[in-house]
Image (cartoon, helix red, strand yellow):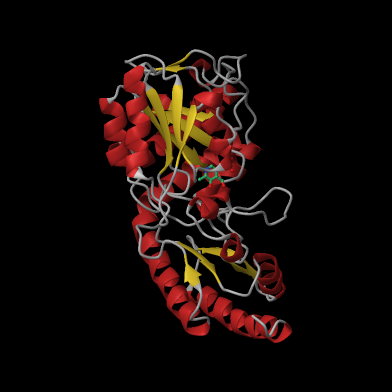
Length: 386
Ligand code: PLP
């Protein structure tokens, strides 16, 4: 059976250009810290990738810190040890809909303020302003951590506006651009952020590599997470994963060139899926439909269904979707994102996410819809009360 993959926000299939770069790097031997020819070749591979990743977000190559993924990049950005021109932020403002890697991975303890969001998933402006103002009465400069785009709903935060406000208050901004990169403009210029976080596998590179990118090299980290061999200019020790970094660089270059065309294609597919979905299930709720959203993401719930039942039935029919955020245990757990948006437990239990990407086609949408109609009919026959 041909599988239909509608889960690019969980991980995107590897782009052929990334695979080719990885294979070449895997076949080469050399530690990038060695001075011999093999070592210098590995170093050149890494530096080429660094240039490409920097170009994607409009930054400088020397300010790219390669990590094991966005989870580590967020932990490094939010470890409470960064100093900006106005001093070291000592309190964190973080939105309630951030990825758990940020919400649970930061080191600010009680000095973290969780910012509520609206029904559309956007930061509540009044709560944000109130949290900023608290600093005027004795707190240090704030650090704002905000996603450019949400992984579950695709909701786009007004990062540039909020960054400007934080900057006026002497603070710093970490922007999680993991889902935005390659799909909408997500650069230092468009976000106004001081640090950007990327994950290779969301843009069609390999899993297990990501980056923290600094706007300004004068931003200093007093305590890197990993210390040792001094790699990544002392900001992240450990022998570099050359093949993964090479694949990440290739994916970054491809997405920089093709991102706008891919976004137009996925937006058309997403819109087709949504209009057909509402035809088959007129009572379906599409989350954040009228708010600014990523072009590739559709999060929805159909009353009377649960995510587990639908996911399993669609999987058997050959389709890979997700229930909001994938959980490492493989179980579907309640979405903290939908809860923060005020979606009732009852509705959230049925929430699914379809997400498109570089190799999606109209056939994927057709396959989804022809699988969904009989699945829904079966579920409704089993529970006529619904
Ligand atoms: N941030 C967002 C918005 C994500 O969607 C993810 C992955 O799902 C992460 C961070 C963590 O990325 P990684 O898998 O590279 O650790």
